[in-house]
Length: 297
Image (cartoon, rainbow, N blue to C red; front, side, top):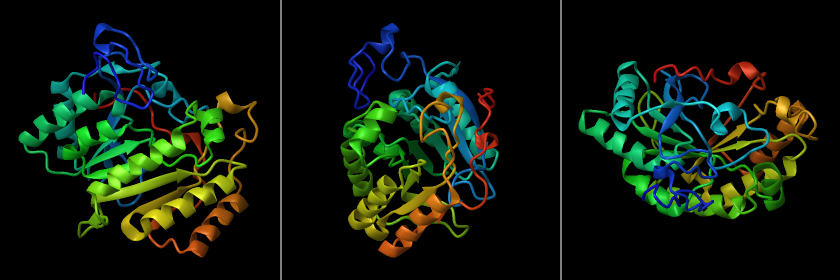
């Protein structure tokens, strides 16, 4: 695993990021981030009342047209972080009472992130490490990170390859995420929680419902339940927020309707999904998107 001929993600760019070349992720060999702070808006088993120690990395291996974190995903902003500083950040978040370390979109920085985690663990880091990903991952990278990751938190965005092509420039996404999930669940049995309800180990799969595409959502839920049953938790989210970049893209230029969300939840119950999380109330708000102001870096 290295960035001299980068193949960390399924794009397999092969660029020399160490020499300053940028891959599809928009990043060269310098690790950058936009925020490191207690994050209260994850699933209850991850954030709870303590908050999750979320580190948001710059760049992304996907290009979702509706991206809620677009300013950092495109690599347009980010503060340089050394391995030593990232090690300190992990320990500082633990000292602040974080329930876990939450690595948000870190696959393109897998090498320095693993190094920092190993150093932090040597210096006493005890809380679980959550790998928060869009699901578009190479098996080799997951194997590389497996020794330092306790909880896998992948998205399952699309079952339809045409939607994946149209909205994320990744026609192979459905097959890639299926293989990634197989790898993740192969190393983790059923989810394990502590006495306060915080997850310590396991796999939680997120699915963000997109407006007008509830059929794809139902197909995803069917696949997850038929394949993994109660070995994983499923988080069904209605927080899709139509931002300015999708104002001319139908049906992404509107929110998910209450009825659309209800139909997906009804289907989940109908097929027997018992372990999961749902969202209640108004979550499709820009206020739920964190400020990328370099806090904690």
